[in-house]
Image 1 (tube, one colour):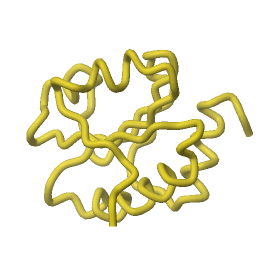
Image 2 (cartoon, rainbow, N blue to C red):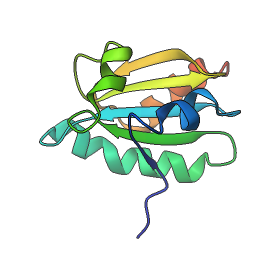
Image 3 (cartoon, rainbow, N blue to C red):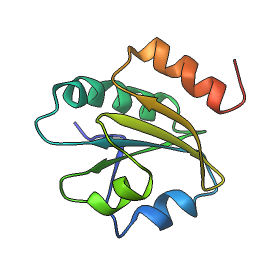
Image 4 (tube, rainbow, N blue to C red):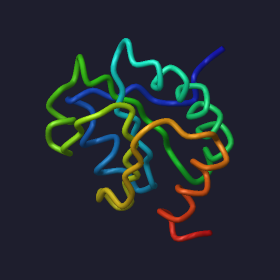
Length: 111
């Protein structure tokens, strides 16, 4: 099974997220994080279901600390929703899919 999310790095972040013409949800995660493991399949489902209007990327802070520092990420998982290259919504911690979709709709101007 292929993941619908895109793996990001410090080197690819700006082009994939900030320069994107679409909203991008970024999952800041770390190895050994139980909540991160629980959230991963939820994000994959959202990426598949919303692929026509939202990109979803993941960035491992252990391997890519610079981007996390740039956005003040102090705990994982943290999700940032970027619209037009700007973070418009921050969600800390894992959420059930329905709650996460509701929070994303608010960040995208819906709901």
